Length: 597
Image (cartoon, rainbow, N blue to C red; front, side, top):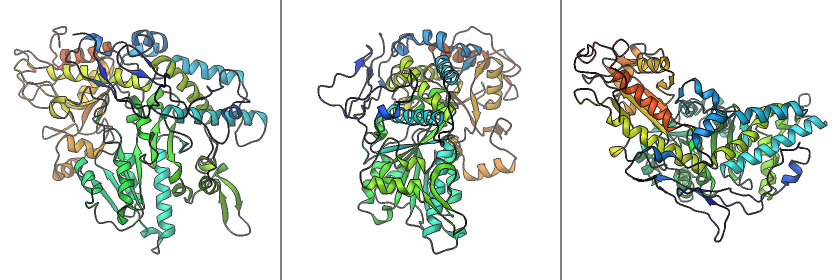
């Protein structure tokens, strides 16, 4: 078979637009362009040093959604080639020499930064004088313009039209989630007649939620509900029950991609919620929060923001999962929904215009000023919504680095559509070959979780990210400790992650735990992390996770597969193979080089 084909779906494209190009594999690389209102890009960059000036957008903002589906039956080496402007091996050699220290397969934790990002950021820091952007002197004004420019470029990268969306910088996705949670808690306390300690808002979250989403329930005053699966969410949106709801104010949250298995959840839920709210009184004041930290790592986000009427109210991202550096997160806020965050109680740094401490306790929030202006159609790139939500001095040096990272990423990989196609092909190869691995007696080596019927999701970027969660079987059908798998991988220079992966509902659903088994694990002293109990009564308490990134290669995949084969598959005459569960791969290995394809 020849090179893998990639099926794409295009939407939101103007007839006759010739701005996209094909790389020869069926993947179209798009450069969405925006029309800006309010402050012009020229005004944002008038004091920027050479090299920092943004490209001037000349066409209306028109995101193009591309969803690759690797659909051939061949998993030859050509399947993950040709998606980028240059071969990925050349990119790795030139821009990621620090990755030669091993096989890095934990991109779900953070991807790896490019050499050019560090060099360009360092060069700018050494050539220019940057001050605190809250001041009015020239170095401060330069920093302020850098921040505004990077904010605009980040929105453009995500495919979010700044006329309809604003970006609030945060330390990470968790901090962005907590900003939303704090605002809902404060609004519930303000509007409730009950004491603040008993005020509540309804909070519904999906079972596959990251712990950062689960933790929001602790601020909801006991009025929370976990949706056990996609079908329960669908039933709720169609008029079903969302639990015993106590408050009319509500927040529905879910991940765009499982942090555990890489399964991608329906993006249309936010739009369906907004449409259902027009007809259902119980949903009228329910907002949506999408955790896109895992999704945005290898998926274009244009589909999320293409239609402001169907987009989530709030979307959190981790930029270091996309670019490797800087360590920065963000909250994309739908401008028509920003007023809910403007009502939070806390303020600090430059988030207020005036504060009284002597003649009464009052303050004037910049976020409230912004929402009033937004209703008058005064949206702008440097609008005050984010100014009222970014407490204290922004990490402006890191934000400078974000602008460089966006440029470098585009130069190396072309587009997120190309990244999606590349990582989808690699994940498909890894999944297929893991499923082929067998012990001498035919016992499969790996149990993969969340794979769907026959693993059909691998190769379809609409359904599955570049992540595989699995456990290793011994020859007798028992489980190998996931901690042992990670330990041996680490000793072999292969870097994976193991444990609960900060996805408590997802991991116990994948392992098919019953409630009493979770209680038993707690009673036995199990806890999340590398020092927990990997096995209880021969049942695993977590998984091993491998996750691929934009710069991952076929060689990375094949070295990992060779490690699994050489370390864990057994011969009939080995002590490990005949151990009846008493042996361990830590002490007995098969001969290397026997093949794994």
